[in-house]
Image 1 (cartoon, helix red, strand yellow):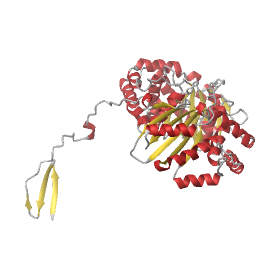
Image 2: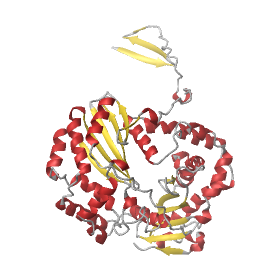
Image 3: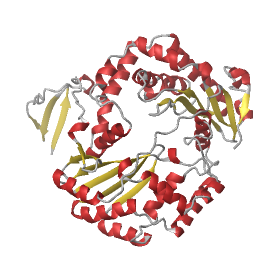
Length: 486
């Protein structure tokens, strides 16, 4: 039997009662510890959209990214408009239109047969409406592309909006509405959007039993005509194909599809956020809180400095000030963070939030506000700024990791008219930000006096504050609270 013993980095081998001389470890040239490994600067150069952009004879923009690793093809079509096109009296119409286009069959093929045919081809197809854009995506085998594309475009061009499937979908939505007040996080999100954008804006409008019942096949057809046509779309294809052949197939497949006008830009909210303390009563053991205000647009000159500041303040995980103070130092919440959510067509919002035991909600809120005031009153440290810069520079290449991801970036940038050199100059813009820039944008965009605070929880337990009397809800807006109904 042999026994190997390592002492002080030397290897001794014992065989029975005999031993051999120690063997020196192999020199690999690597440091002994991982933290001693030095990494050079990231040398990522983002691809340019023009390299992948093509245009069909009818003017339809197509992005192509051939890749032959797997015999698969992903095709997506992005249409401008989504919930932004919902009539005020029928919120959710765009979403239901997208759903029934996929679930409701085509004019040539009943819904059940359509589903079975896709399954037989091992093809996935879907349509989803977002706030300001609607996407249709198909994933298929390269060998089944032609047949899959024909089915996919039939679904987009000639949906049947099957009456029975529509009735089922309406019933499911109504059933979900009955449960919308069960989850405190959903309540917090819903009421915050109403405060920020106004209840009549599409970002905050909510369906009711009555509005869902008003969704008819005629309404679906009207929405379909507005959104789904070549004048309102950009195509992206990645996977196993030859570029020229794909362009020919798309030209032929899209021929005859009437080209309408692009839908207008989404309407900006007219509501003005009223600073104050708001509360939704719900008897739960831990209160949920969010505070914040309307912020900036995506292309605002202050967007990048504010992005870095937000990382330092509350978006940077355990290195962020809010997380360190609320969780690590005080143990008041499992997670506490801030979010900067710019919008393309109008200012979005900045918000910070957490969940804490009812008696410590006020204390955690005070600590969060102190962190916001702190970045306004004093410069962040050089180390904080450097960490935030490195995080931004090192993570943005992830958007280009795969061909489908890369094309999504290009399509979104073109449809929203982002500057063409945005990603090529992104690193330089990040690295040029100074500590003084961060304090300036904090003072300009993060004024606590203009913020609203929304709490969901049991007010009788939350309002008095913690047992140590370090904070109570009386500390915010003089304790004057506006109760919001469920």
